[in-house]
Length: 232
Image (tube, rainbow, N blue to C red; front, side, top):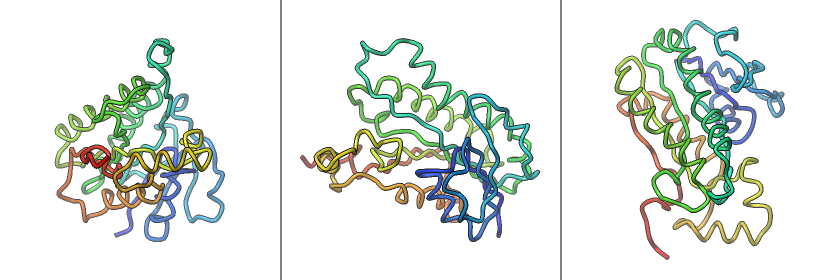
């Protein structure tokens, strides 16, 4: 069945790979600041900045069957160097803007037979890591929010969260900027490589599909084994 899938911030990275997989079979709408990389895809684009715009102002279908919230950040600094404003910025982009989007879309999500919502966290919520205080705090908020939202709105719609480790996207470019860095990051993972955007996109498409219809309120680690295996 052809579904209406809305990707927030889906013009690059994981969102773009997700759109590539979904576009042939579904009505994919990407709401993002840029339409770069979308010219060859059969998708609709709506200009949208999650930190400034209201989702209710967009011309969207009356029914949304799938929602994927892609905006995120990687702001890795020692805690002593982070001002409170940095935590506010991370929370605003990762969490508060997500809340506004979901609230604005509630009527359209409830019009679906059973909509599926997919959010993103980070392995650093489960595994404490130095220099991750601000991003782990913001993503931890998403995990708690998603579980509570899933409980409140079941069975009307499902909510699941993917918690990746380092993934080779534009957002992580500074951490993977040369061969030495790539080799070091590969070795940190039991599967001996960092993630690729398509790895995560495959899980997103599974969570949006009927194949995951008995899954909700889950935090799914896609981290090359980092959060559960100690093989070094």
